[in-house]
Structure formats: C-alpha cells, structure tokens
Length: 163
Image (tube, rainbow, N blue to C red):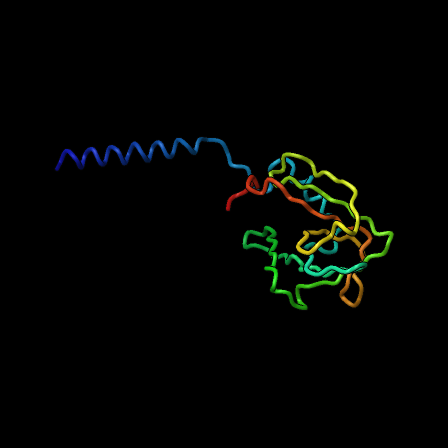
C-alpha cells in the first residue's frame, strides 16, 4: 500500500511536469493578432449592413441583420439571429437599382489567403445568402444599395482564436 502511494505521487508529479513543459516560454499571440486579419476586415470596411437574405424579389430583398455587441474584454461579438426569428428590430429592407454592383467575395476564415472577388449579378442573391451591403441608410430604416458583396466563407474549421 505504501509503495503504491509513492508510485501514484511520482506519476502525478511527472504528469504535472510534462504538462507544464508543453506550455514552453513562447508568449501567446493575442487574439486578432494573427497575420491576415486586416485583409478580411477590409472587406467589411464602410458597409452599412451585413446579414442573411430571408426574402428576395426583383429590385429588393430583406436581410436578417447581424447584431454587434461588445464582450467583457472589449472585443466585438457578431450575433446572427436564427432564420425564423425575423422581426422589425433585426430585419432590414434593401433596395437596389440597375447600376448596383454585385460581387462574390471568397473569404478565408483561417486568414491564410487574401479575399478573392469575382463579378456577380442580382440573380446570385438568393434566400439564406450571406451578404455585405454598401450604400445609404434611408430615414425609413431601409438601405439603398450601391454595392452588394455575396460572402462565401471557407475554412471555418481553421478560424484562429479560442472557443
């Protein structure tokens, strides 16, 4: 019995030491400091609305808007309401004219590649499409779009950060 307690303590000590050596002396990079984050953030710069299309008609669509909140540590948190939870507080009507520019933007969530753009048309906007809208917010609460980016995010499983 005395011998097994000693072995147990020895194994616990070795385990603790091996766990601590895994930490090393390398300082951990702060969240958001990974290379490439600026590339993805530039896609959203100047946007008046981001979200998911929930209803679509020729010349207009309704967007379930992404809500932004601030975390306890001061970081930004994006909250996407679930489809079906539409309401006046989180839905925005977007209208566009024939001169509105549509593009598809492919965003690498792992931040290893710069966003890639390709031309698109209004027909590429469908229900449940994630979009980024640039334009003017009208006094009615609607948005008149000058440019619509259809975002396609890939490598979501390789997003940097802790979860």
